[in-house]
Length: 596
Image (tube, rainbow, N blue to C red; front, side, top):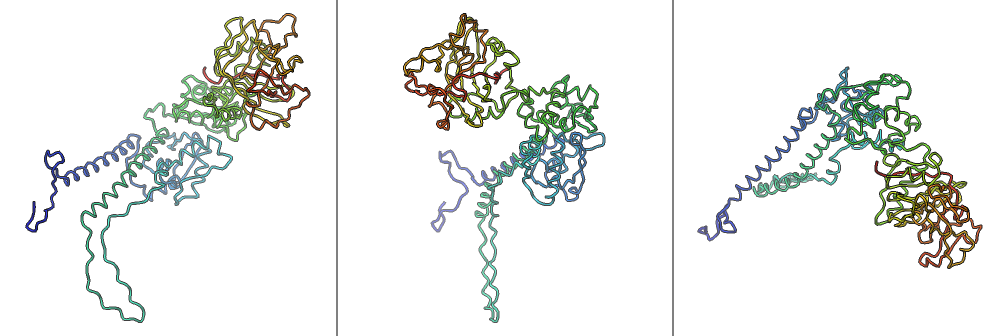
């Protein structure tokens, strides 16, 4: 409508763009604002309901100063620990602070002395409490573990879990929004010394902000605060989920406590943890059926083994080799292995054989060296399940048949071997199975890789030696005959490529296992009876690692560096061992890298 002055009167109503009618945007805005408030209240109530469902009080207010003076008494997996509530709440916003702020006191499992039971590694909990005492009354977000404990999972897991503050990262770039402008009078300047103050000016009140300005300020604040509210909600839910496994489960039988006496020290778990490896497992029987008193192992080892099982139960996963190995810490490996086996976690299964050639460092190096390949083979991070030794030549026999019997049905495979009189270590990773179904040799399309894992003091070079997409496998009767012998005098000329060396397995185009010259036997034995002790290894100047180019291998023969006319693209062949082209093996082992 046009007023008398010719101006349009303001209206809250505007015609809908498609002409269907008019909308009152002010009412719509109010309605949406109310819905936003309702939805935020629903989110807050959902957190309160989840809090109460877990046994909490649902109180979202900060704990009182009086409650902070409480001294709490704990049974930490059998060890008694006392701490003031204010100490445990020093890291505000942490999982630990939520656990012991007071609202979950009724949700904890209690022992017969009414102590709060925590299924935690006792030494780690005591260490953390000792550190937090120094920060009582201050805000702290992190506690640094000493170097000696930074690779000890019994410490790192619990300290990181209990000190976790989900909101830290989210709040890192947060700046509080300014409050809506309220308007105010500017203060008058103070009179200068020895001067008469000026006469007071006529008071002119400052104009008050318009309602639109106030509203716009509130809208801007809400835009900034709502994402933060969502973050706070997510952080609170993270903390609740983190403490859930440490509270009552609701099943009284599973929450009941069972203990054993290990050389005078109590080790306590819930029945749920005790039976987590099986109701009739050795671990369960140690707590539920066998004599609870044992003096056959030190308490430290039992505590660590029990903690491995407890952590797996909390995470709802199976016990893994890497978790077991990281739990050793600074303890003696022999005592730890003994405790593992005593409590039903066979040490070889989770830590590998004591006398094995393969070490975790070797697997990690091979993983690193294979990163350059577009299709890198899957290599587990540590020895122990699924990396299990299935063959050892000095125990199981050196014949080709012995190896075939051991590796049958397993894939992928890792063959690792030690050179006699040099202690060099080599390995071949075979991505498929070694299968022999008849007397004849075969050449399946199975990719294999070659590595040098350990050199000598004078020649320490290690690295990947190359790969091939075919595998040469002898049968039960016929050996692999396409093996070139660079040491044969008649083969030294550039263009001669006479093949007069046999083998039972050629892997990665680098290693020939069970090599034998044709003139060594008047009547060759069947391939199954060939031994694996003799091996040949070579690589090319394009396959060997870059830092090997200056490797001055001992050259007692003029043909140690061979140039083949049939391989113009890879003209120079080199022996991989300081022993030369061919060498004897002191040990050979086979590991399966996956599967059952």
